[in-house]
Image (cartoon, rainbow, N blue to C red; front, side):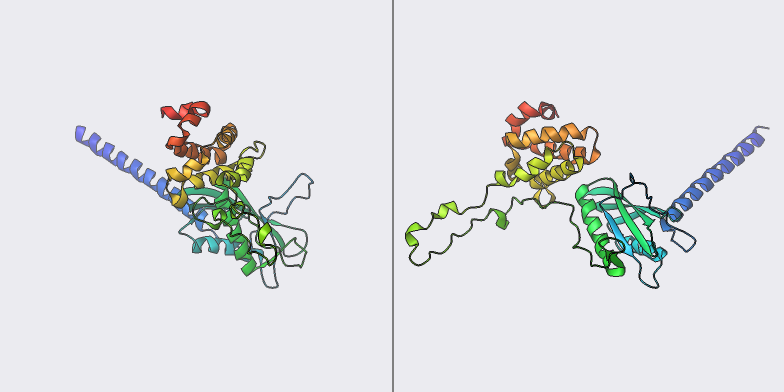
Length: 312
């Protein structure tokens, strides 16, 4: 009797295991299918709403298909672009029925999640490719958008506005240029002008021809950090500050010392006030504060502005 129960129990356990294994395999197969699906002629993109309150993102690319091109070619070209860049891009979900695809970009040891949605616009063969950042780094998103835009310009007719046959403007750059604190030309002394004949006596002194100091060059970034009503600007400013402290991707205490001023730390307070409800601001801000906490020049400023970081 006992032997029979053991056999029955073993059989039940094996059946349960097979059932769980089957479910896991089905789930894995379903996830794989979601990532490898393609767009076909059976799938139709949704029409962009004509409601005045509806607005596409600024990171939207207008495309007018040429003769012989189909909307599924446009969508599948984007999938192929991501597949060809698989070292930095990973497709997470493809929904041909909704004409959307979600993917992650891995750059600078960070993951940025993005989503592309294709809308049909009024008129034949006119579409909008809207790109959204779901979470992650603003600068990575901007760089990826530029690469996608360049790719589409090579394969399709990208226009300023759908229906406008003029060539589109240069690729948009949504990430500002921030000053470097290395040996770049921005901080090299400008040679004074050569003396003109007859005016040697009134030539201005050579020491007047110098570029702004690093503190003056930081002012635009500080201004962005203080824009508490615009978290996207603050996220870019926080990332720029992080890059100042990590030239080449590693913490440099000498470079970080440039940020050890009261004005910068007041800007960090503004960043922290926004970081409570904005992940894209909080991540680089916390990383920045941890970097600065290791800088000897910042100790007095931390006592005044961020004493909680001194106890970590």
